[in-house]
Image 1 (cartoon, rainbow, N blue to C red):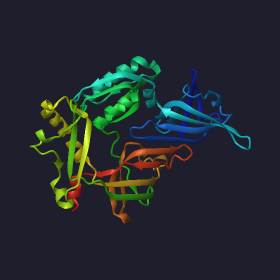
Image 2: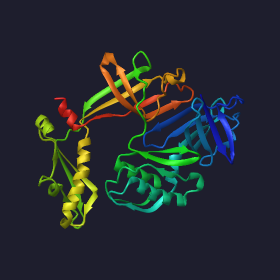
Image 3: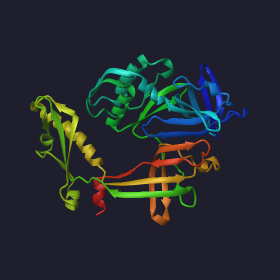
Image 4: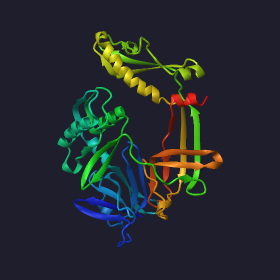
Length: 372
């Protein structure tokens, strides 16, 4: 179902899935991918494999191709090789690879800064101009996306890797990032949310093998105090000047149900030079705090699913891919919800049985009140 190719010293060698060479076979091939994480691919390779001597950490590149779609589901480099000999004298290598997103860890950006409100696309253009100036052509990337959202706070960094800065920027905007490819070009793509709604349900007596759902109350806050930093004194300022003199945010419905439950958070990225500029600082602080408060989790619903990827044997099913959202239905448990795949572990030896991690469905504070 999959082909694995290693590229070394300008030569490409199929090490798994060849239709010609029966020795082009690896064991234990496993792809792990999660949202906003560098994907990894690991496998074991034996001396009779035609690519055995083409495996060298940081110098060999590896791609994994899906036969059915001809798409590369992994592109990266070898970063760890372990030589193994068993007590029976069997020799092999255990190889671990990391996706090309890891290239961004190779480059340190000495100085970088953007102002609040800067479009994410502009911030990324600045970042990748600096990255590409230092990276070899084989590792350069073109940023894509981010034209519809702005950085929520001033940001600066010194001597950080390009990957860490990318992560910080996307965390500020609550956006996702990944490497994509088109017309032999490598892109660093950002989006508020990748993936789409799948037309394939995950249902009992069909493709659902096992399910565990857990619901629990979590960190209910009815009075939230956001705090910014005053540089000249080292003290704090509140949102009061921008919130009718009140220094906290509240949810009246929750307060009526649960009483007063307070929490405070210091936003060390929101600062003012002195209290003379507290009015503008309070507006910025309130805007960021309101977004945080509205998204605070009142309850968590987590799913652990073991499902069959029936697309491999039946064209009427869509494959179970990272980022996509599926409807999960088990009438016996009264479950009928849409959940998103946020992690996938795919075993090349058993591609029909991926291990899936589904995103946590968050119930906002408003939804908690609605369940009274």
